Image (tube, rainbow, N blue to C red):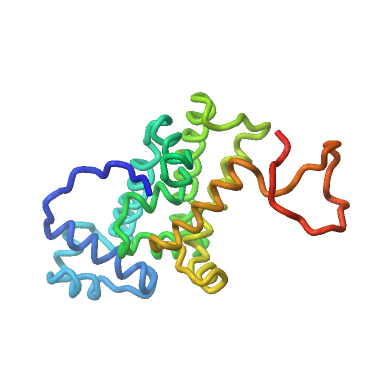
Length: 231
């Protein structure tokens, strides 16, 4: 799977360790189920020191949100020609999907996917802000792909961006259900390869067969088979 270059590593500090522990515990227990004392114990420091660095648990959550949003913003800055290589089956790369770009920026055992799932599904302002920031980044990315000739223009670019983003995030939001359905965790190397292979097929060729006369297939009573979509 092709990956984007990662930001230069930064030496770990107590502040970094507190934030890393908060991310892990928020992902496991949710923000409401995690106390400042829990975070302090994980980071090997005192609750007072947690508050010294971040002011409050809410301030710490905002710092974690910013870190997660930055991961996607960095991945979304991938050059269009590199994305084109990722989406080319001949290169053996990936699908160039938004979720794949996010996953390329985190190690396999990262708590980020679990945190993202909790954040997006809890109905809070933080989840709405995160999704909106990702949508804006994804829209800019989609526009760059269209401008470079990698993607086709859409009649409704906002709807196209939202569709692609939601479709790709499904492998994170519905991880356990997808794993149960296909027998492979979609966030493992094997599962991501399966997901990518079919995503590339659908993105390049469409999911439904177009009749020779170009008529719609909505009224067809026969089985739907995968093939070329209308262009």
